[in-house]
Structures are given as C-alpha cells and as structure tokens.
Image 1: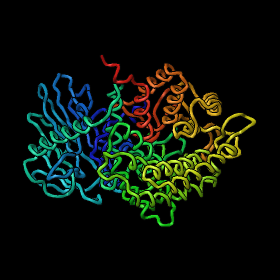
Image 2: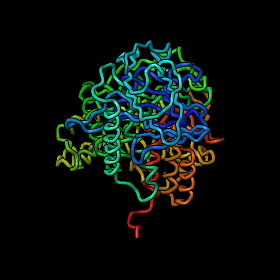
Image 3: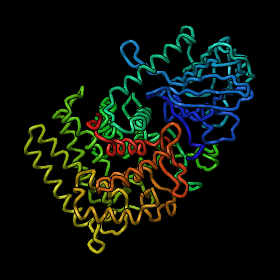
Image 4: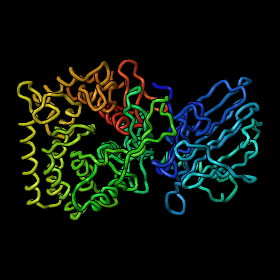
Length: 593
C-alpha cells in the first residue's frame, strides 16, 4: 500500500477527517466535505501548517485501530521509557432532543495509560486552500482560528499557552479538545466530550447491529459499510465518490480529480450494496436526494454529478497554494464532468429508485406519482441510449455510443416496466417493456462484433471495456449465455494484469492507463465466481484484502506491479466491491452448526 494513503477516516455524515498512523489530522474540509481543507497536509506534506498533531517527547511507537464497530479511532502513543497515552478521535453523532446531533466538529480525548508522558500539541489549521495558517485569538480555555468561512474554535481543559506555543507538558489527567464552530462551548468540556463519545460509540454499534452481514468477512464488510456511511452528506442525502481531491490515479499522471461530489453512478452502486446489507437509512435519504433532483430538472436533462447541496455548477479550477499529493499536482477543485453528457445516468436514477416500489419496510414507499416522475427520466434514457456520450469513464476529448450507457438505458426501461406491473398499471408496463425490447435489439445488433464473436465497448467498435461485465449484473444476459462467456474471456485476456483488472487498455485523454481500477477487479472476481471458478475468485479477493490500508479500506486505483494504492480515498466504488464480493463468496448462514 502507499504509506501516504494509509489513513483512517472519522466523521459524522456532515464533516470528516483523515488521520495518519501517527495520529495526525492531515485532511479535513469545513464546513462540509467539499469545503476549504483546514487540514491540508495530505496535498502538501512540506507545509509547516495544515495539520493537527499530538506527539510525545522521545516517542518510539504508535498503535491504531477503531473502537469495535464504530467510526471512533483509538491511537496509542508510547515513549522510550514505556509511558503511553491514548487518543480517541471522533466527530460527534448521536441522538439528542429526538434528532441526530452531528455538528461540524471534532473531538480528541487524551488520557494517560502508563507512566508519565510529555505531550506536545500542534494545531495549525490553514485557510484558503493552504494559502496561509489561520490567525489566532484566545482566552483562558479556548483558541479561535480566523479566516475559515464558518470560523473555528478549540475549547479545551489543556493549558492553552502550551498549545499555542507547542511546548511539551506532562499529561497527568484526562484532556479533551473540542474543535468546532466559532461559538461558546456550554458545559464542562471533559464531561461533555466524554458523554458525546459514549453516545457516539453507542450510535455506531447500534447501526452496525442492523446490518444483514454475511457469515464470512464480517469485519471487512462492517468497516467498508461504516466508511460508505461517512461518505453520505446526510443533510441532503447526497453520497460523495470519495473524501478527497487530487490524489492522482497514477504517479505524475495529471489524472488528478476532485471526488467530493455526488456522482449518480457511484451513488447507485453504493445504495445497491448497502441495501443488500439492509442499510435502508442511506437508501431513504438518497431517494429523497433523487426526488429533489428530478423535480428540479423539468427539461429532463440530468447531470452525471452534483454538489452535495444539489448544486449544479461545479466549475473546475486549479488551486496554486498546494503542491499536490507527494508533490504531484495539480490540485483541482470542482469537476468539469458536470457539463458532460453521460447517458447511463438516467438508468442509474431509475435503478436507484426502483427498490422503493417493492420494499414495504421503507418509511416512505414509492407512489404512483413517483412512478410518473420517473417516466420522464425513462423517456430520456430511451431517447439517449444510442447517442454519443462521454461514457462512464468520462472521456474529455472524445464521444461515442457506449455499450454501458445503452445497457443502462435498457435497464431503466425494463425496471420501469417492472414497477408499472407492481403498481397495477398494465398499459404502462407494456409501454416500457416495448421500449426495453427496442433497446435490447439495438444492443444485440450494434454492440455485438460478429467478426470477433463478442460484445464491444461501443456500437460498431472492437475495443474492450471492463464495464461489459455488467451485462450480467444488470440482468441483460444470463451468465451461461455464450455471448457473455465470449466477452468475459476476451476481457480476461485483454484487460487482466496479474491479480488486477484495467478499465480499458487503449490510450485516452492522458495517454495509456497505468493502474488497475479496483472496482473493475471486483467485477472480475464476481465474474469468476459466476463462471464456476470460485476458488480463483476467492484467491483474488484475498489478494485485494491484503492491499487494504490498516483502516480496512481502499482507494480508487492500484499499481499492477507492486499493489500500491493510488487515486482518491476512501473510494466508494472500491468499498462497494469489498461488500459485494464478501457477500458473494461467504458461506451461507445455514453452514453454522
């Protein structure tokens, strides 16, 4: 793994932070996930500010892990004399006054474990994308950091002068640090932070209890599910693709993108995986996000990506104040994909929504009016299924009719037919089944390359794309279909690199791809299992598990030569792959004796 990406996330579905193995905050944006990174050291390791560190004099070791089944991180620091301390890191998330309390805040609780250690606290938030450290004012128990949009205040029972001057001091009692909005803190900081910690632990452990876990790989699934939940912006129900921006897909490749937004494609796969785990709270919030989105698009056009507050303008810019991950800029904010045409998005809106027509557990089951609203999306899916687009890989300089986009158009019409039947609307069911049949005919004739005896990535083409493996997952073909088998064999021969799978192996806007795409590797593992090669699938899955960070997570991409992680982190696609493959490869619960 890449040591620089060996990070542990904390968060509360409003804000988040990435903490390194030494217990330093190296990435955290405020007042929400797409905001200004007050802690930006991840994208400029040489900056003398932009991190929050706690270290011991003569420190010799660190240990780190999560409190069981939570997003609360525990770090133990030890000095050469054997003195040790414990740090608990979290963002508060718990029930309060009948609703979830999730302030834009972070808690660090520090207590001695053995001996008497000398602790140094270095808290240096940055402003304006790393342009400068925040200016400070302070009082007897707080420090105010100026220059951030929402303001920032530390409230603590630690000696404020020692924190300001970063001088070491003896840790002889429990200390609490509450870093949050620039407003007075009510109550005793130690008691309040202890109570918030206990309630936050209870919240996460209670949530994990609701998950329908597989028999095997439970810790893998729990950790991936919690991380996916941390990628939810609960205020609107949006789900971001990752918590970071501009971690390159490959060394010095320029493939540096801002993933702190809601891609409807990525979110579809997230809710699909979490619904399999019965995490219906995330599905319900995301469905509300989609209803708002569809209602705000009277023309029927839907962007592939939106801001977490349903913002439509994500103008891309380069921030000059940060050198980039390992010095590999540029650092991008915003994402030009929002102006692209990616026609698969209509299918993903429908497929994300369709569950609500069948699941009686939902607090708000889908209605006939919801169905009619979705029909407008279905009409766009049908109208665009054979039109050129940028595709799911978001090519910036070329367009074509992508088979994956056409498949998603077919799936939209097919599922609308299912929903109509469920609602007792036979005429609408016939209508949408007819639309689906028309698209199926186009795909089977124009995406099929008779000379090569397999499907191609685009209509009338001959190239390969790992997304063709989704033909089975979308239920367009059965895994026993000879056309699928031939396509699968071609993908294995053309895109497999050892244990990993490339998205494609043709030059794109930035040249030849260098790294494997982790989600595609998981698609390949699923395909191996369906082909009856389950032991091989399990071996590759175990290889992917070995490549996870110590937090149990993955980024977007992986170097095929050494398994080093690249790309934004933690990446929702990759976490979905962990969950789906664990569910598929696990023994059934009936095997418990």
